[in-house]
Image (tube, rainbow, N blue to C red; front, side, top):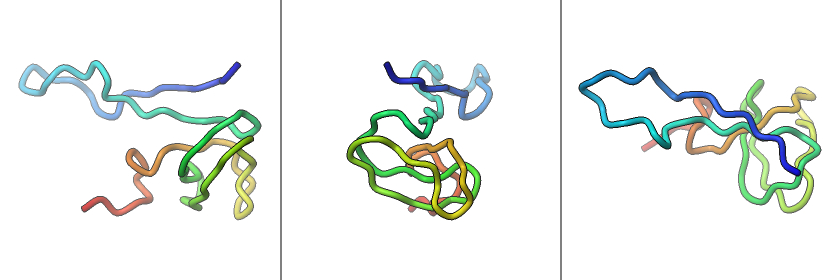
Length: 75
């Protein structure tokens, strides 16, 4: 069973489209994961296939996808 936390990316206003799927999905270390992730604490980037480990840089246990991370420069 996977433990994931969700948080809204930004508040919804009437002028914006509905935020039905606009959330940040966090992934806890120790749970199965596949893909690229950024540490929420320090921005360290990892690729994972299997169990998501604690961050080797800061020891953080919470990860997010690069698409929603403030640590990654978006084009």
